[in-house]
Length: 282
Image 1 (cartoon, rainbow, N blue to C red):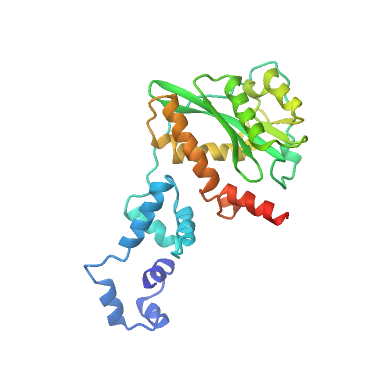
Image 2: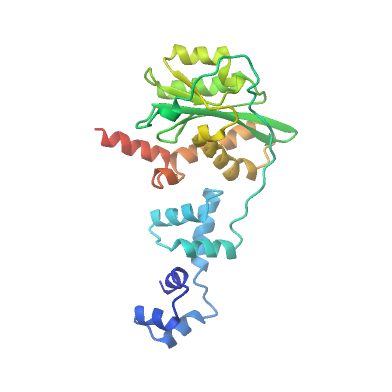
């Protein structure tokens, strides 16, 4: 407790802290000078345990996860311990281009910009990205529910074609069976604008929506997910091939949906947020 207070209020003199905790200065200095006990050791162990399970968590999510585990710790202390113990490292990614908007297919207006998302399966956002494997890249396509932030469909392929985006869409349709009227938002890439893809959307009663050219902010929630996927899974691995990448990414998506805390959802996992919504509708 005294350690938390010092981290939260470094501007306070020791004498004021002692008065606040009804502790004598001799007791305080005896506590802080104990060479055989580091008060941060137990916390560091807890943080390392969380990072092993949720690779890439920052100090804010770790603080929230500690609270869910009934361990209330000041976020400033968590950050300090992570810095001191070298637990804030991030690996830098390699990049490649996945969006090809130089095509003659129809482009659709940005419906997402004028839509207030209020429920699950009202808006899906889709995108694809690259994944480094030994000898090259494979490509992952995902469909995200804009309200719950759940990944409702995904697919992985060695080829950057509409086949991978169609597989992700098919998986989402099978998993959710949405009612007609759902909005599907993507960039203007050929994999989403091609006839094969848009015909599937039309057949399911889904309305197409597209970002402005070269504006990733129009699909920000999908971009945010891919950043998380890269930082917390892909960039920390060295996949040998497609199968190994599929196994790792699949495990991460399950973790992301069911257990990873999401800051925009009040620090609960997407599936838990969805369950809370459906419970409230009963």
